Length: 430
Image 1: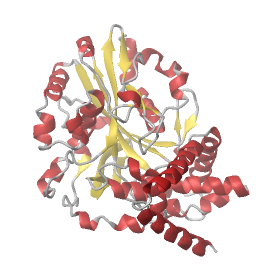
Image 2: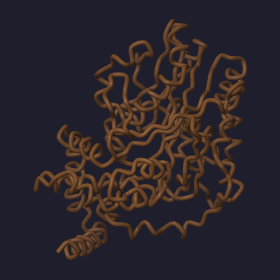
Image 3: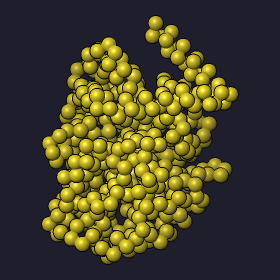
Image 4: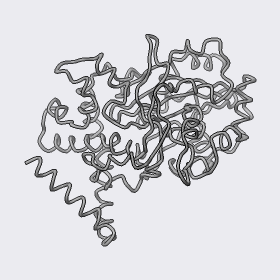
């Protein structure tokens, strides 16, 4: 019966996909209502409670992150081994190029080799809901192969080249599977353990860790790899800028028209670890390898989401060196890093267990109060394209209006920052 239902659903979605061009007005109404229902359910308190209980049942709280309030959130956190930087001066955004392990990485790209996601389970159903919010679906980026760690924490990552569409329909599709499980649970009140067994996509991603009992070490290895999926690495950064005797924090409320975490509060910049710009012909091996820089990726997002630079959204032209390293705002920052007016550090990686996407997390602290004189503006990912004003280091943890709806990876990055030693240093000097 299940196979017949899935086959019927697959055929129906094919019909809808083709019919959309001929009867757009009717299908648009149907589609908009389904999208509205999908997101309204996912944003409901009942669904959030379900998701939390599901992830706690599936992974156990040992893989959760504990916040300052002692609350635990379903985000897996791996701290960076700070001994790697001991006694070294971090004065360039490319300092952390060393994070990217190049051993065995193939820096070539042919789009025809990256279309297999169209055969994935739930592809058409999920595309029907989120497809119109997916931009630059064929742009290449760096997908997680594995995190390389020692006994003190993370030291490197290794990646492979894939596309944003592969990430969406092999990895983000987990949110649709969870949505389907929620509706099954809500209708038939099945036990959570049964729903975990029915999580076919998620189970395929953790096949090496599902050994019939709690295998924490195997699950840890699975979570630190890209096993069973094409998972685009993310980059994010906590930005603190001196203002009087405090520091402002760059944060936005995400708009409703984005594919990931619509309506949530998020520390910015944040985005995918993608190739810098669209190619008019084909991407060269040299160009792809030059983009294998987590620092460049996060500062590309910095220019886009803090200064509103549209050319950094992937629609500009030019290499990383021409578009980023020669940008006057980046050169100013590197001068500040060199003379001690700013600090730049890698904190580690965090991964929302619901979506299984690692986000390489940084912190940038600008001690020069004159930097506040710059005009900061967000992009279309933020509600009204605005960065929220008057959010400060001194009282951030008291902002319940933000924390009740803060995106999990942002909250986990904050905890990495608190545990880095830099937090206490700033608090003591305020």
